[in-house]
View 1: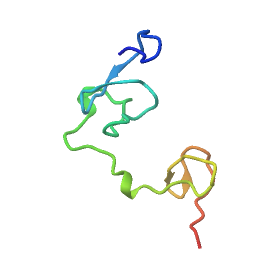
View 2 (view 1 turned 60 degrees about the horizontal axis):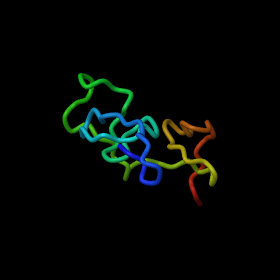
View 3 (view 1 turned 90 degrees about the horizontal axis):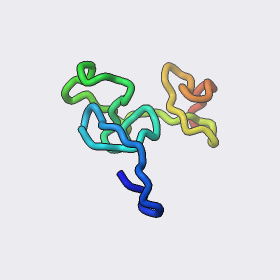
View 4 (view 1 turned 30 degrees about the vertical axis):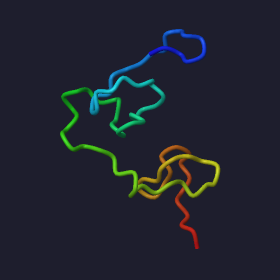
Length: 82
């Protein structure tokens, strides 16, 4: 993949789920949501992240997701809106 501005080569990886060449910007594919830390053999067909059911951190400045009552990113407990 080439940079649009300077035409330099940009590092890409192939997503284990959708097969697209993407920039490694995190642990999940920004196109399909697959966990990029998994190997091809660990990915099951139909294994996708349902982003509509996730609970976002209640701290207004954090971008983490709540799991088991606490934010996976900052560790703060989830406080539902009243």
